[in-house]
Image (cartoon, helix red, strand yellow):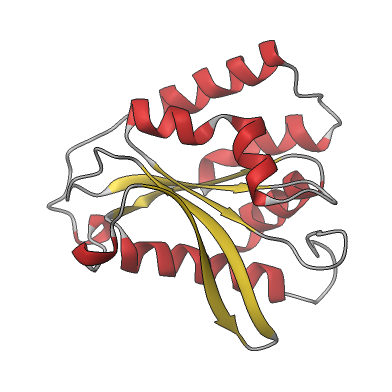
Length: 180
């Protein structure tokens, strides 16, 4: 999650997603996420269950101390067993994971570039992220999402990134500080 500072600054400052700007963001992510075969490192290992690595997008429910929370997981069809980068893509205020998946285009890009994408679901009637103050339940949920994905799919833990739009970018900024 260390390499998010440029994206965080751009998204937090009110930069607007247009087709052209989203394409530029995809290019920058494509360059940064480049696939490496460095599975010998202990950091690269994730203990995943090969039975749970079904390709495509599907919702996963996690039990959390304050109740159940969900996230949308996209595993590329060519995932294999080599550890892959993971992008955690956070939706904006009032949005949801399916909208973030469509807006970002990350799932289609993941198929092309071989990486995994998790789209966590914020809380509330109008879903949002609590990024300020001492309430760390969203931070803990996102950490749990990363751990859960690593149980389900081959994740390279040295290449876990976070990005978001609007309120999701604000949460990404918090993650850059507390979960580098």
